[in-house]
Length: 632
View 1 (cartoon, rainbow, N blue to C red):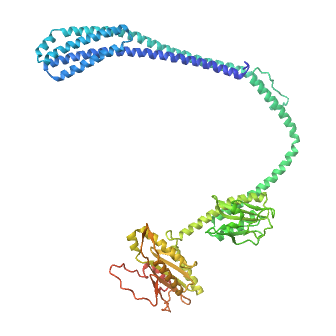
View 2 (cartoon, rainbow, N blue to C red; view 1 turned 90 degrees about the vertical axis):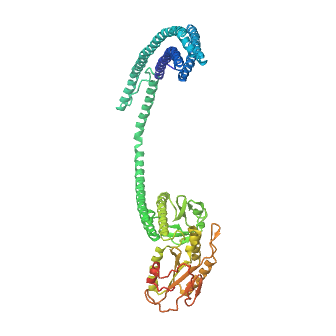
View 3 (cartoon, rainbow, N blue to C red; view 1 turned 180 degrees about the vertical axis):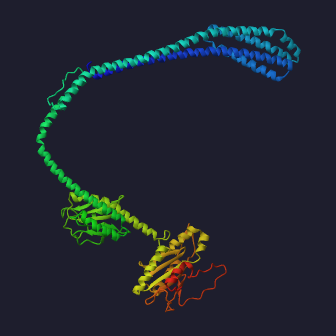
């Protein structure tokens, strides 16, 4: 790498600073290790001195325990003696191990260990005499002074070791302190030296780069002020600044050529300006269309019925796609048919509904367009196969909820509006379907899927008013499961729910599609049959009662037994008004457990344990009494 390179100088400074820092670190680590070693030896010397003192203390305590035992004959003193003797012998051996690295001290430790052994033997002899019962002999041996002389010898040898170790401790402490001072001096001198070296190197680097940088900046400033001939010198003494000057000169040449070319580009810019204005107008038009689609989406969200939704679509879609007539189809509840919800524009011959398999777009799950007749297959629901058209599925959450049919050729602008239209219309349709589903749930009983009592009362009011105006007959069947409490008490409430669902399914199959089957409450049901005569409705009730009696219901693998129902029929015929007495008393019929009788049958004798029979005139059927003559 050449010496006049800025990067080479930076690398040289970095290497120099790194080498100095590395040298300082190595020196500090070495000095620290030596200091730690010195302090380790200081601790070792202190351990030797402490061990000697502790050993002497153990011997003295053992001697006190010996004398206490001889005088008091208490075993507590004997235990103290044994513990201290064992501790003194252990520390004597430990002391010999600690000074193995020092031959002189090791010899002293060996002599001290032998003295300790002699002292221990002397201490054990009086105890041996006492063990034989001769306590006076033991006391006399202690008084002979033999033990004291041995103790003085042990203390002398211990003092010799301690004096030698204290001399070593002084030397080693001074060495450790000197090494710690050396570490401190090395850090205080080496650290600032490296920082100073780095600062000086950076100052020299900046000074060497300032001159060529100023030359290049002067040329750039002159060019920026309008001197298009200003160029930078390409020989600055540093390779990087030479490359920068060469790149600047090349850029200046290109800018000069671009300025010259700018004059020739004015006409092209004028043309582009016109195109931009045209695009701006197109964007404005699209913005208006998007705004209309937003308004349409808000109104679709607020629509409550299919007719309101269709009215919104017929109002806004001709404004959004004025040159493209079409229609919107949505699925029916069973998803077996697509029914036309709304249409707009000049369009005719559209079917009111068709099966999903009649449309290729629904089969493929994507748009199907016929641009040129005869070049692609035609959907079966299209009435004019010779005209171009587009079928676009309305998707929401990956599910097809409808179909958009557009007549004619779809250009780029119509395609854009169609995309935005699909983004707005799909969520609105989903919301409408959800609202319709919620309304359906509010009028249905969740257990039996029959209409609930609230819906029954509203429907009955409407049907009574309609029958009063038109003179058409209106009949109502009330029925309940006999002894239903017995099923709940015997088999449990879950079995009762299974029974009610089975009965409800049979009720739905035995009446017309126009009849309104409701769950009145508990095990009670009501069927509103507009236009039905009592005789015809009674036969249906008889067949239903027979079917329920033959019904076999199981729960958890267990049969629930035979089920029977009681029925009552009320009818309002032509020429009568609500609240009038029945002018035809013979038009009364009772159906009990699936069997009918004319006239009203005699009530059978009931057993004492049978549950009480409810009367039709109970409070929960007061609405029937108020509106229709009750024929039960």
